[in-house]
Length: 433
Image 1 (spheres, rainbow, N blue to C red):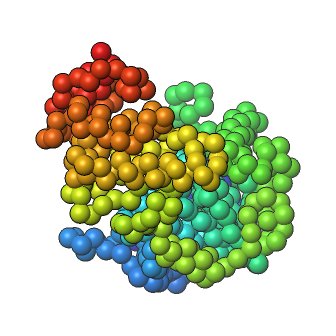
Image 2: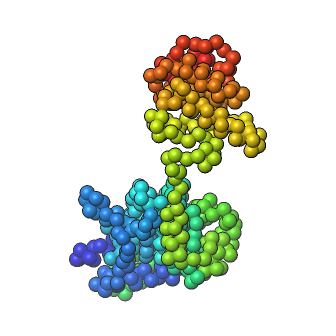
């Protein structure tokens, strides 16, 4: 037997006699497909197109292509669980390979969103749920759009369900949420060939569904129970990923497919579109600038004072400090929702950040801003004076010290002044005392 024969004998073992999340039509096609490959007839393979991404060191292909800031992972052909050695040349794709492609794409800092380009009738049940849940986890970090281009049936639809959004082409086929197990009884074929097969087994359910003998009624019940169990998990998975679909509404589809707009109406997809339109939309969206210039006005920064490049304050320290003023302090004027109050608070914070002894000192700035947000009634000059008196000029502004200290600055404006602290944590601890 040649290496090719061995290869596709292994492929056959992944398809026959095990549950498949696959349309019946494709289940029938696969048998002829694999037999044709084992006989040496090779169909034309799918080809990835676009800007393929390779590792800078090894030059090995990462399994996805990139258009601008959009990563594209293609899911083509029938799906099997393991087999990174399977690819376009065999017409099959492994969940193992899809998972690695997705991990590579999400770890690429230049990829802002991911498209799943799907043309698949489904495949093996084993491994699908785990891969779909991986897609859902990745979608929490970067937007994932599944494009039914132009088939996402059964297991392929299960993968698509993990995306943030499913877009189907006008002629795209989605659904087929069901399970099929194909059994080949070859006992008569062997009889005609003059071959007698005897199956020895230990364990009542061992060798159930083997191809050398007809199925008993008990064997049929066992296999049907396995199919039903997998169906239950499949339905639960899709319902958990697609809020518009309940478990009952999924079962009501009766493993049928829906095409184009019908798929949208049935809740299997979110909208009509094409691969090109989705790619264009995502490229434009990720191209919009969401960053603020380093020197912004207070009104542009939601009431927080702007960073002063001449003050010698590290931007990270500044950002951490003013975050308190924006999100935790809920300054009095802003909380009241009045324009005059908000403006007054911005003026107060600006006065604090530019005060003598505060400007250019990260530790004192941190102390002053937190004190200002926790004691909104204190005037700017009093806040600045208190921070100058209680935080040494060379004190550390390490924010980690703050987390372990009591939250007691609200009383700071009424207590006696303490000796200067050497760290922000010391400052807070002294105020707690």
